[in-house]
Amino acid sequence: MIQVNDISKSFHGFQALDHASMHVPKGAVYGLVGPNGAGKSTLLRHVTGIYRPDSGSILIDGEPVLDSSRAKSKFAYIPDDIFYFLQSNTLDMMKFYRGIYPNFDQELFFKLRDCFPTIDIKCNVRRLSKGMQKQVAFWLSICCMPQILILDEPIDGLDPVMRRQIWNLILSEVTERETTVLVSSHNLRELEDICDHVGIMHKGQIILERTLTELQGNVSKIQVAFQEGMPVLPDNFEILHMSNIGRVYTLIVKGNPRDAQAILSSMHPILIDILPLSLEEIFIYEMGGVNYEIKDILF
Image 1: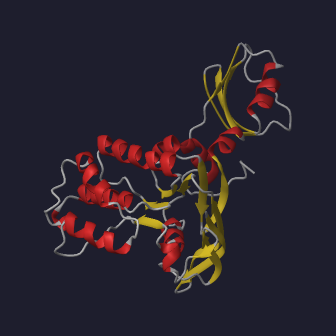
Image 2: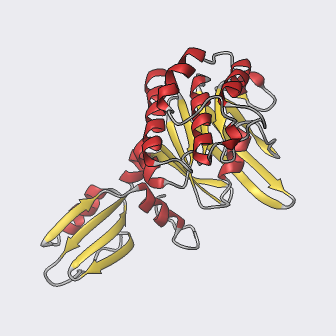
């Protein structure tokens, strides 16, 4: 659905994107994660055709997005910093969106009014709180009936109840209409609940791109205890991180969890347990801690 091919972009000598490539399949919920300054927002602005790359190409459904109104009509974009016209209220913005998007569903707009009870549609949008402005953006974007939703830090300023409400609406669109969602966020815990594909970005490149299932299946967290302390492990047993409380060791191990469990079980532990590894933990180990130095762990 979205194909980013080897794009690069520099601003006054700063390399914001460095031969970045990304593939978002149709109907996927793709989470783009990375540290501050990794290039996530810049990449999304290329995907939406706001920026022109120095090299490379971006295709939406096989069609170049740059200068193509047809390709751009397929997506709705919610940036981190939302723009509204100075004197416009939500009703005015609805009429504006309706004039741009041929599939805008005005009937759905009024049906969804109950989902956003705190929004006065006749109040100037710029006078609303940041969270309420985000609600208006989601409300309008869903009514555009887009094939693709592109979201940059979408949940900032939203309370937990409204976050759940909005994600439920979006996932409903994914289920019913096979809407493709590309979302950039620092809230890794929330992405883990909704994403089925993940791309990790660092220094202008996508350094890892996999389904969440594949990502979690290539590294494991194992708690193990031995009667006489940790034995000498084989050279091919790749430990990425190890900590212990008394005789109980927690290991982050590269490779298939079943293989790692079999090796440890052969050493007759008094306790062994494989624990789920969260997306946040994968990100921390992949980015190498505080300085975000790349570690060779998931390749």
